[in-house]
Length: 211
Image (tube, rainbow, N blue to C red):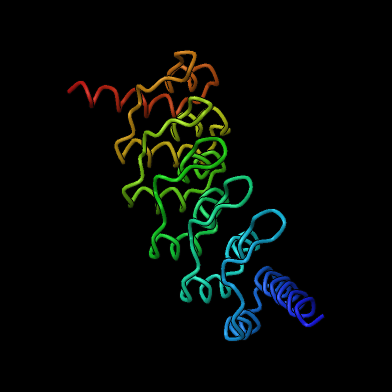
């Protein structure tokens, strides 16, 4: 009977811990850490408290958890991690914290993409800027056969946000000649979509490379 109660108590503490993380209740999270809750306890979807905090952009809790040693690369059942999710969804402050605490730049999501690729796809300019200051592979190709540059063009709308992302990628040295699985280049994709400013940037980059 005592063991059953102990197990129930442990489960209850873990559930409250995860709920507090999602609600950005830093005081409650600190209290439960002091009580000995497993910082890496997972929910039914394999999400750690830090990943739940990242989902909800719970910055205060994320800081407490990371300072307490939470794994910024711990993946859930669909291979999201706090680092990868922060990058993909533009959780900029949490992303910076993960980068300062051992983020695995080579880790990939369920689509085989690094954090940079969905950041470019989702139009998170500042996130792209931050990631480009790291050693992340700018030319990594995901399972769809796309680089960050290709994804920004194919899945973007050609507007100011994506123009800026393409500019950042080009300035950071992205290979503008890596084509998709059908051998369609970034320039061809941009041209077919009438993304004039992106076309001009790619042509200029190509000319500069030849010089």
